[in-house]
Length: 190
Image (tube, rainbow, N blue to C red; front, top):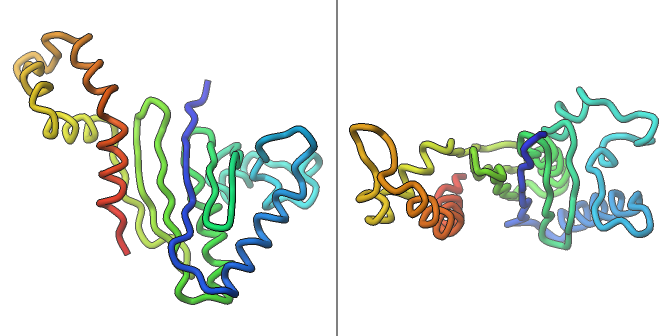
């Protein structure tokens, strides 16, 4: 089973004309949502006739993942989830479309693998991707251990194992998302 990657596209800077482009993108995608559906496949963004035209390779190239769904959207952003990787290509395309009428557009994509095996924050402007800062799970664990002294005490450097694995993972699960969100916030780069 594929790991889900949760992402959030956040429009940070947009002009009135750029906002109209974003609202058009959202309304075009939303118009293809079937009654009773609470999410929409992002393939509708690139395929004219989704059921006939859907293509795995094109999804990966133009959206960034083999499948992806938007679950919530409004005038300032979109929540989404995808398979194995974030939807960076989708966000880049959105930024470029808005950038055609708004040279100062800024969009941020935060994302997290469900385990999390990786997390990241990517920034986009009128030209697309500016920078994508990401951490793998071992790098995240190092940051979490640095911020929680009790974890340092539970880590055995010699064996590279926890002395009390259950207590260690309870602590990690309690604090990791706050630390990840703080790291994402601190690592937005323009």
